[in-house]
Length: 346
Image 1: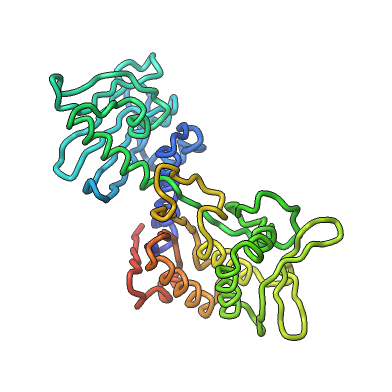
Image 2: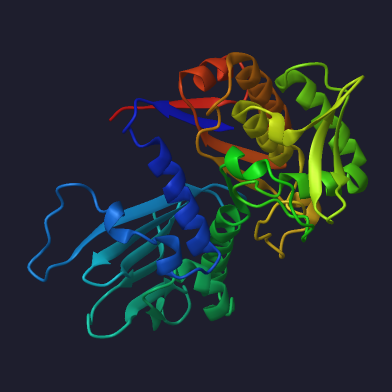
């Protein structure tokens, strides 16, 4: 569980946006989907070169059975969005994959990857709008020891990047009853009532934990958290107390965000709208939740309860949380084992 905090403009949200972009690229998405506003990613004051090109760099390190694997990507934002360079290295500093744009007139990059066979490297063109590392499992046969090293490193990085669920509950869209759908919670949690209806019958144990969390974060005595079908076929979520049932549309924004985030933490890939890594057994699946504004709209009591819930679930080993918080959330996180609070400066 990692929480970024700091003054406005210090880059908290940018860190999560970078993570989400890398996750999309690791899942095979094109650059246009990962960076819908590429010019917004170019650092302020960056001057174009002699060819009128500007861009940015992005990267990460993924640790695992193979050891630390580092990915660095150079992206050209103008005049055309394209990858102009990529490098994959292992913990020993050995370059496993490198790509470079050699002919601006072609929509490919020159790629070389380590083989350690009769030829030390294999060379081939790769598309300039997709992450080369994500394509390696489709291009490398794994016949030599070097190729197997490349595959192990690439697969570790891709699996680490995938199965990411960006979550930003929007209370203004969560109040109205919703039509039944596939029962998978979406990014803005507008279909919260539908998913509560599903967990009420399909995941009774998790639903009971969610109802317990609701008592800690919602005003008044909460006995149960339920969802009911209305005559027009839509579903409405309600909080049940000893003498009354309160529709969720009457709750405050902080209560709605609290409930939505608690639901995200207590469910899994089967309930959230996320791309699962099919090659990883279900019992070993690890989901990463990105929550920009994890404590937004929450009071101190709610922030403490939600942080404690998240820390306990992350400690179980099947969920990671990366979020941004203000002073309230940072204060609530202090003292929790396994929670890292990263203070950023502008």
